[in-house]
Length: 242
Image (spheres, rainbow, N blue to C red):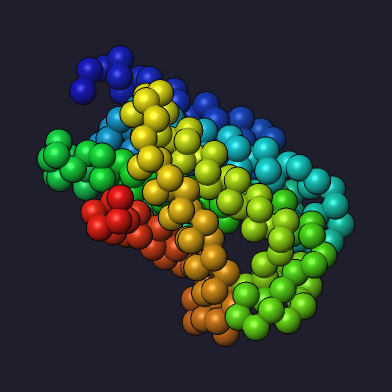
């Protein structure tokens, strides 16, 4: 890797993280984790992969800031001001990071499958983030396991608003990821990350209503597991369905 490429990666990975801390959207340890994950993805994979992650992060910050005053009034925000800390960043970033590290070992023939898995892991995070940040404002929340009405913010709670914005976020992330990595050529395969993203979001709710609410796993473990689930599902769809 040339020095200028490394400098570009450092700049790309660092700029948004520093801005996020300035806006109280990341704690200091969250910034360090974000920088580490971003640089790992850029170095082992490509600047295109890194830019997909940066784009998702920026959209996530926008979703966090939307209606933050109302979420704070109800106590539904992350941290004190909506900020994410190290655990949040690692939970979302561990799967994309691992995929980037594995990528050089898989060979050029598997680049598309690996890239689809990568976009899918981020689509899961995007769907879950938007569903949590925007969908939580919908008071008509039902538990995914029995559809009984529950308060907003309940583990495993789903709503029409949350589902719609999650699906939209998953599709937008899939489309942006596809364009950034593969270019403007349309391909039906871009719907794989969109499907995997919303499926991962529903899996997050299912785990939230069962093992997470009972204390067997944390929400951070849930986020990491569902991102991996989305990646594995996307590879299955790529090989056997599409």
